[in-house]
Image (cartoon, rainbow, N blue to C red):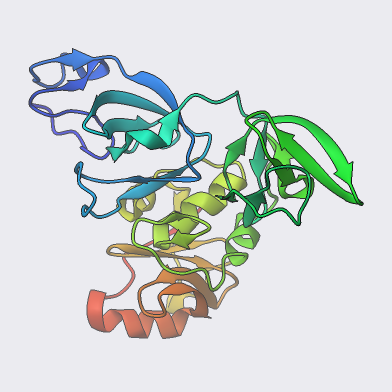
Amino acid sequence: MIDLDRRLNAFRPDLADRRLMGRIKADRFVDGSLRRVVAPVLDLRPRPAPDAGIDTQLLCGETVLVFEETEGWAWLQGERDGYIGYASADALGEMPEPTHMVVAQRSFVYPGPELKMPPVVCHSMGALLAVADFVEHRGTHYARLASGGAVIASHLEPLGWCAADYVAVAETFLHTPYLWGGASAFGLDCSGIVQLAMRMAGRLILRDTDMQAETVGEQLDPGPELSALQRGDLVFWKGHVGIMRDAETLLHANGHTMTVASETLAGAVARIAHLYGKPTEFRRP
C-alpha cells in the first residue's frame, strides 16, 4: 500500500474515497457527497466520539465531501484544505450559495435588522454567508441573509475580497483564547491562526504545523542571531509555529499564556528551548 497521509486522504480498510482507487486497498470505494457546513463552527475529530480531541475546525459555508454518515457522525473531507475527520452530521446541510465573508473578528446574526434584538448565533471571521439584500434601520446598515436573520453590513465583504496584510489580520486575534485544534475566532492554536490569517489575505494553506513547514512560501536562512527575519516570516519549532510582527517580535497562539500573545523572539526561543528545543525551520510566505 502506498504511504498516504491519513489527514489528507480518506481511506480505511472498509471504505475509501473513490479517487484513491488503484493506490490503496479497501473493501469499498465511494464518491463523496457534497455538503455545506451550516453550523457556525464544525469540530473535526480523529474518531466518531464526543470525547475525541479536535484536530481542526471548519466554518459556516465551507464545502465538504461526505464519504459516510452513520449514527449521527459524518466521515468527511474539507474541500478548502483537504483535512479528513469525523464531525456531527447535524452541522451539515444545504444553504444558498455564499456571496459574502465575515471579516470582523466575530459577528452576531440577529432575527432581523435590529441590534437590540437578542442574537440567535455568532459567526467567526472567515464564515461564508449568503446575503439576500441590504437595509438600513435607525442609521445602522444590515445585510439580510437568504437563510434568515441579519448581520451588521460592515462586518462583511463580498467573496473575493482579500486583506492587504495577513500579519495585521493575525494581530486582531491578540488575547484570543488558545484552543487545541482551534481554527476560528472563538479559539485558535498556533497553526490555526496562521491558516486563518492567510486565508483572509487570499492564501489557502494546509492546516498542521508540519504541513506548513514543508509547503508555505520559501525556506529562509535567518542569518546570524536570527537577524534576517522580518514582518510576516514564520518561525517553526517541532509542533509549533509563530508569526514575526517585526524583526524582533513573535505573535503566536501558545500553551504558555493559553492565548494568542506577542513576545520577543529571543524570549520565546529561550523559553521553548527548555521543553521542545530550538527552532527547526524559517519560512517567508
